[in-house]
Each structure stands twice: as structure tokens, then as C-alpha cells.
Image (cartoon, rainbow, N blue to C red; front, side):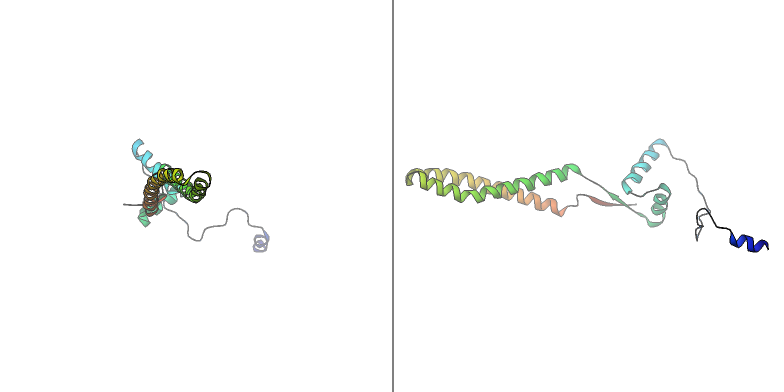
Length: 148
């Protein structure tokens, strides 16, 4: 009769885990060690400290994500400059047409010579920017793995 009463009761609470973690370890850290531990823990992105320690001990690799904001901002500004220089290139033909339309051929050629010199400098600068962008694209900006 008691077995029938126990079967009819509803179970409440958390479901038991299939494999219980019964062993507990405790260790103490100095203030410096704790600061380093917390910094690594924050960088790892793991949700709790016990999981972080377990992964650190048994997996030997900790995934840490670095965001180097200064490199990212530099990359974005270079990209923006490059797009502006390309826009200047599209307007170049319009400037040449206006020079020949509104000025005599001799005066237009003189202005065009000045424009050509500035364009050469702009092309050199554009090449430098393109090289910098390509060198930054090859480097990891946001990810890293800490191994010990």
C-alpha cells in the first residue's frame, strides 16, 4: 500500500545528474595570483569559474579573445581613406573635361600638369594605404589561444 502512495507522488526539484561530481578541491591564492586568475577567467569567456579551472587543467588550452581596439580603429580609418581616394579618382575625368572646356588649351595644360603631379603623390599614398590594409588583414585582430 505504501508503494502505491509513493508512486502517485509527483517528483519536485532539480533532476539528478547522471554523473555526479562528488570530489571537491580547495586552494588559496595570493592577491597577485587572484588578479591574474580573474584576468584569464574574464578573457576566456567561460560562464563559471569551476568550468574554467576544469578546462584549464584537463584541456591544456584556454581560448582567449583579444580585442585590440586601436588596431581595429586604424584599419577602419585606412579603409575609409582608401574609399575617399577612389572617389577622387572618379572625379578626375570630370575635372579634366572642365579644364579643357573653360580654359584655353595652353592654360588647361598648365593646370593639368599641376593636377598630374598631385595625382602622382595621391597614387603613392594610395599604394601605401593599400599595403597597410593588406598587412593588417594578414594579422589576427581579435582572436588568440593561450597555451601553457
